[in-house]
Image 1 (cartoon, rainbow, N blue to C red):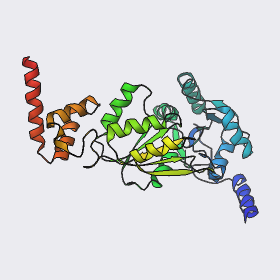
Image 2 (image 1 turned 135 degrees about the horizontal axis):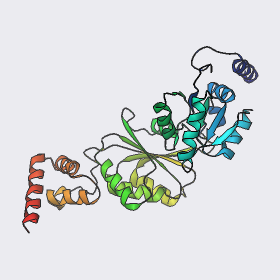
Image 3 (image 1 turned 60 degrees about the vertical axis):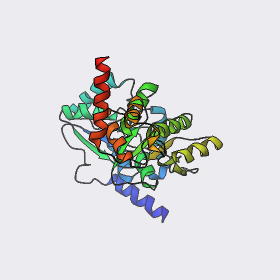
Length: 311
């Protein structure tokens, strides 16, 4: 069966096909090509075919991508395209596309344009009237989501949190009222700190951490954010993580104890605002947790602000 599949693949790669993949346009096409996130067998037949046919492949790390190309016997020339050279390299690639060359963009793993500068090149191409088409494949965010056990109907992809503490807290504060499942990427050395920040800013929600997805040591840890913190306190995080966290619900309001009357509604709102939540969301969240009308909480805020202005 394996030999037959290889024979069919080789035949398919050399036989011209009609449609969007046959490169005969006067202006080049920009292909966004997904690459494996860990398992080389996740590379698609179509991706291999197009990578062999295009004139040029733009890669985040040419040394990393060269290993992939060598594995599949792809001889197409490589050029670097990454965060640090996109301002100069982007227009250069657009000129080549306008001149009729066909170019594929790949990231180190997964779909280009997700948490990398591929989206900037897409915008340049669209502004220039260049055709952009996807070559779908592996994606860590969706793979982590569907295996998390959390709601998959609506979700928000966040990716990596900002590096500075202030910006991280501000973003987590804005996400606190988001009702949709949240998806983050995180490195092993930052994971424990991120779990602590999320638990503080979002409340102790259900979550799942997936590491080494599609690889030999793939692992999922599921439970509350507190459970995950305890697990990784006892087990050193290894590999890159996809972290999936439940959206906001009545039971997941951050910084509020089981007894909501420990503070006044005003104090709870001010606490949430201080953690980065905007005023409108903070009012809604406190009213929801306490089971009181939003106008009651809003009125307390108005009185507080009026008093402070007078002082």
